[in-house]
Length: 223
Image 1 (tube, rainbow, N blue to C red):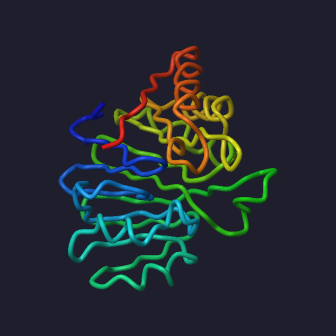
Image 2 (cartoon, rainbow, N blue to C red):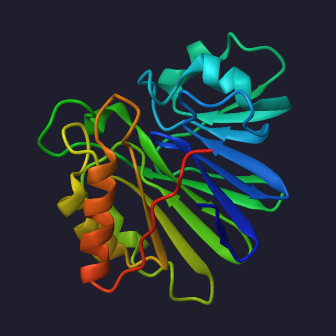
């Protein structure tokens, strides 16, 4: 399934990988991607774990002179790539690239040790003219999500990409509660199906729970 929201195309690259196309192409956390995936002008990396900051996959997807936005712990890995521009961001930072506005929000585990809050890892909020996309990164259902609850109420479309695999991140029940708080126009499950954690069944359960709460949710097929 190809998702298009207000002329913004959203493709699933597998696991937590997403490709957003709206004039520019923005890739987020590409991992185990196809050789035929279109090249991205901007790549956003949420944190340094191998299934999110994969140099071989970043190399596959970057266009010449691409901008790579990442957390500080990714920088030394990404510097091995030639011909890219690196922008390091911390929680709460903002960046403008052309007509894109990119903001970071915290992503962490509350009671698990896989993603400590003090690492400063992030989710991304991508603001375009008529669409706002939130990629949560690897996270639990955290208090910082409260600030997103009004994003879909100002005439724009708000899309949330939420991890659902459990173990390292939210499980389907927790992710559906996050979706209920955030109240997006569309919720899309991520972080499953790549052999790291999570299955298609987790994504299906998330969608089912969202629909029980009258939230629109869809599973995207990997391109």
